[in-house]
Image 1 (cartoon, rainbow, N blue to C red):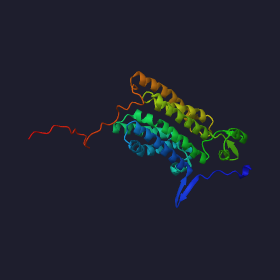
Image 2 (image 1 turned 90 degrees about the vertical axis):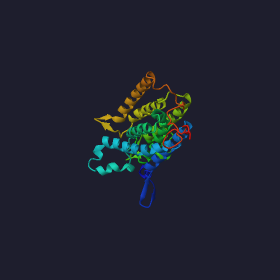
Image 3 (image 1 turned 30 degrees about the horizontal axis):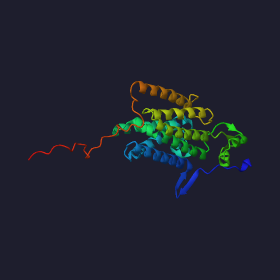
Image 4 (image 1 turned 180 degrees about the vertical axis):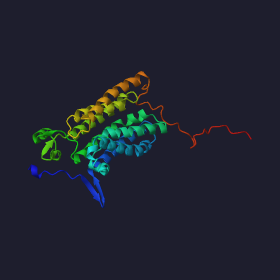
Length: 292
């Protein structure tokens, strides 16, 4: 029976010369759903309806470039002999930490240019980012990547997994931990938790910090099971980054409270939005008419 198990086709469909892979399609679906969730909340919080669309125009390319660059840097031995392969992102190889770095840098610049509060935007986006990550992990599933150590088929069956997942975890003659699934489920649980925290009305910035800590806890633990780790001098980079993020997030939250930088609450909609002007130049229009 094992000899008959075939991996799922990584190609979703073809349109003439265009080949669409499940990997890219699922990441795209995750990004689209994340946008819809964030945009809905942004409008409720008083932002213009096209604000997140404008942000994504710059943030998505930056996230993709950051994700690929981060991955290639720590896996350069795989691309040194053929650097062109570094551009083949449809084959997998996007590091979420690189994506976050790229997106956050762009978001900070975007917020400053538009006169918005970065922390307010980040808080709104936090559950959406986790949602996109949860869906995107299924792209790794289709590529048979992001898996853990070897296990038995009985182990996977005891997890009550559907047959298609068990079969997809049969790689090169052995079964492996579906760590993509562990992380996807952890992220979905985080989405529910962050949506609940909106009602708690945390200090501004703490929703995003909670997201960073939540994801890092799950990623750090799951990374210890994975076999395809990115290494830096033999050290698992994702584990180190996760530990730094957890500690740094806690310190940052305490610092912002002590310095009065987090006095406003998530549900406060009273400021940090560009003032509305009655004309494109922003000049006042209520000047008194000159007497004739």
